[in-house]
Image (cartoon, rainbow, N blue to C red; front, side, top):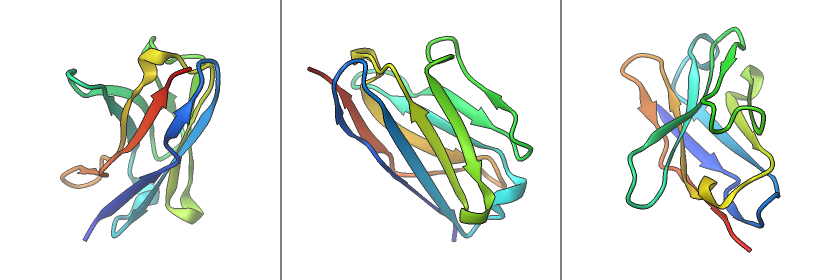
Length: 114
């Protein structure tokens, strides 16, 4: 049974930073790509970052230069470092494992507000 558990969300002021973590179990983590997505209230879920099994990363323009995705295969964990946060970054953040059928975590809430 594949399980992804996100953590690290919370309330942060504009300009601040947060690091999200996603721990995977039940999957062959090291050979799969992982991604981060987010969904703001009333909006569609949108892609935030992807990291391949070899560590290649891609981002949309909206977060490029501010967000960094990384992985630790020994810990079956993918991270999302978020800097220079803006109010429009407020959303529930989800991680996804692209192995097999594709698996999602339940999300962690990030609120950027003064």
